[in-house]
Length: 253
Image (spheres, helix red, strand yellow):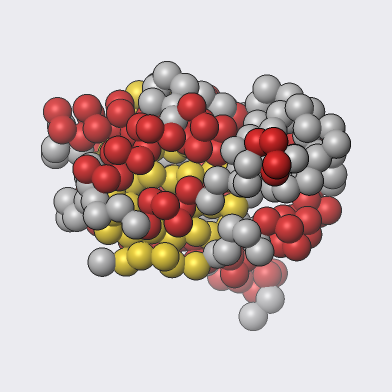
């Protein structure tokens, strides 16, 4: 059956999530954030928890996430989303709480907060967007920047002898006793999106079942910061980021 025949029958094959607002997203063309926002909105809508979910938005490119998803939000100080999520989850145990953070937020200034929240097993879902760079503030080197990768603050490439190796934080998180589900995915192909969708569903399920902390890293691109087209950035991500930030499930209990 072709598209014209489906349209003639009046069968709806897809519709935009009602949780996505009409605000135009500020993200650069090709950015992964919009795809992940859409998946989260679809998951919340499909499970009917719009009135029972609270998101914690970060400081970073996704600082305005509350403009795009029609749910309750709290805005955290830089890196403090897990601490704020801890408070919200404990004060409102009837709610489903999730954090949405980038690598500059979570894996740098917020390292203490995420490690201890996960170690305590706070009943939250953490969605971690890792594009190996500070995207919002001009493309500076992040803790996740690859060796020899050029950025605004490492114009000759990341010097491991001076600043150390990339922080592969998801593997650290998987070792903590408070985490029940730790996974790493991407959103650059339909197949990858399908896997990420399944992981998000599992993470939200765990939170509603009060099983502890679920942590999902999304290996992403920053074509503006990387100075590439979206297509080039996706290919570069697969070739360079995936060998270090390997997709897959690290823990599921």
